[in-house]
Amino acid sequence: MARTVATLPAGTRITDYISLGVIAKFFPLEKVHAVLKKTGRASMRERDLPAHVVVYYVIALALYMRSSYREVLRCLLEGVQWLLNPSLPVKVAGKSGISQARTRLGAEPLKQLYEAVVTPIAERDTKGAWYRAWRLVTLDGSTLDIADTAENEEEYGRPSASRGSSAFPKLRFVGLLENGTHVLWAAQMAPYAIAEITLAQHTLPQSGYPLLRKGMLCLADRFFPSYQLWQTAAKTGADLLWRTRQNARLEVDRRLPDGSYLSRIYASTSDRRKQRQAIVVRAIDYRLQDVPEAEPVYRLITTILDPQQAPAQELAALYHERWEIETALDELKTHLRGAQIVLRSKTPELVQQEFYGLLMAHFAIRGLMHEAALQAEEDPDRLSFLHAVRVVQRRLPRWVALPPSAQKSLS
Image (cartoon, rainbow, N blue to C red; front, side):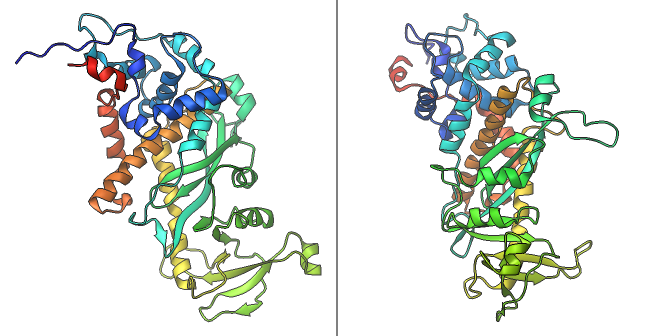
């Protein structure tokens, strides 16, 4: 039986139909429009690339890091080409037009969309996401290479190297990871010269945004513990399990039945001497036997003071879940971005725009993987991130959501 070729309703454009299925599933069009309105970036006149399309386009760029700007846009437009008269070519904006559209949009809408949508997603049935009653999360940071331009170098800086300086400027970022799902949320970026612990101070206390909270157990490596950051994190209501330096001064105030002990941390030597403004912590010292290159002693401190709630042996084993964030960063920097691939944006604001687009693309893929894991009653860690990326890349051009008003126009 012959099928009539479907056509777009009169007065509409192909870009009105782009909402990119898999991306729009986690970043709905109404959310995008709300952010654009809030930031004053909504398109005020008809364009080939209106603002909402550019938002989706920036996220899609992260899925095709090895492809040109125009090729990525062509890939998106192909998803609705079947709606048109086959004899009519699909218009793909040139590189200059795409660059102008991204510049008009700026970075703030992408940042606000990321902050509004990307949050922990684990359910009670999500395997590997919980320790007893706590949701496991990890605080950590990393860096990304960015395009080698004078503007980017001036804004973000370039690390030194044994011979001169490194090949590319770099940005630094710190964020929180939901261990069970590998969702990276609350990320903040800064110039390379900003230390991770300094950036973390600006990451945790954000207001109006669900960061650390009661019911979470936050893990962190030995480079993060400081009196001020510990105090800031503990005030959120979350519990903390952070590694500290093995030579950190922690007097034994009271030894507990499981081998851990209560101690105190201070802001300064003067405060320690005068025993003022102390924060009580529980310390756990342990060794890893028969593990090559293991350090002599590992030392953890935690806000969980009652050993019956969380025995020392369990916490020592649990701490190594912190390495989940290394896996997630590898997903972001190697499997999604691509090994030895730099962020392509040539100006600092577009670098920030691309950074949040990359994080949102990672969230969309991880969200799909979480849904698949729940249906299969599997741990999300057992699913292949690289396979999921390839599936999304193959199917993205066909995953197009149509506005409800257009449904009746299709045959």
